[in-house]
Image (cartoon, one colour):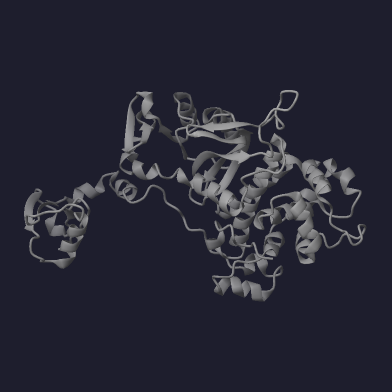
Length: 456
């Protein structure tokens, strides 16, 4: 006889001879330490309650028939009781498939056998294609053609330098220009080693650097981000079936005070005000995150005075238009909660898991204290795992934590909505480049680690 014990103290009998008959109850006395393992389990379960009397519990023995295991929903019910989503492991590739003729053999061996080895910056640029910005047929090249004619360098080198700024936590263009001018090795990694027309001062200053980035524009960086996202989907790094949406504040280089003409120094920004007070003056990044991998799928930037309902209502049609994979589940907090939003998500063929406010006064499901869902939009088959699905929204919070704590992308050094789009695009591009590089060197454990490939 094999017994399995749960928190509710239900015993399941698995012998074929016990699959007939009715269930019965029995009382076991645990006042004496008979069966130490079971006694310790029950004692730990009731450790907060002081009992003066001997502990006696009634257990229910369930006897099932074999025919019950042939029902259609039995296997699905057992699976959903264990976990909310199923994460497939990323197939571990051999570094020789992508790196055999690109990086030295000693580095390939290090990736295979040394877990502490996290790579270098050059691996990001050697294993990923940046020729997107140097393509003569692209609009990005023609926008920057007049600027390119003044110096002899590739436009992709400028984008590589901005990726270095994210990985090395460089906050502004002045500091980036100083480091590139002082550190020759860092300039060679970015691709500035072939410049000959500028002499000894071969690195541009901060003003010229910023003008060149603006000529690339947020549209060019967004197109490059979508290219990297599609490549991640191709290799199975991003699933895109279960996603979460949230927004985070982004400070601008302005205090929000009005000038003499009555307008603030950054007229496109707004005050981000929450229930607990004023957060900042600036913008908000709304991002959609793949829950299984914690990687960004799409992003948009809005003024800080837009609430979550306005942002989601504007963002969701754009997401459906640009989505490479149509998700099955969408998780958000209670910010965009409304019948219109829930119905729009459901009409798109996506299961809406939008937190609801208790003050709505409608039919709600209380998963835990303070966590509610609208009952009419939740499938009854997932009621038993709804408390687990309620925690999937935290995938976007972890992504924001990496951006603010590790990459330190909390405050801009410039102003304007276009600059905010560029600022957000660069950190999302860096995250996807790190994931792709980790996959190509055969180290899937480095996909979500921002400190990987940060050393020079």
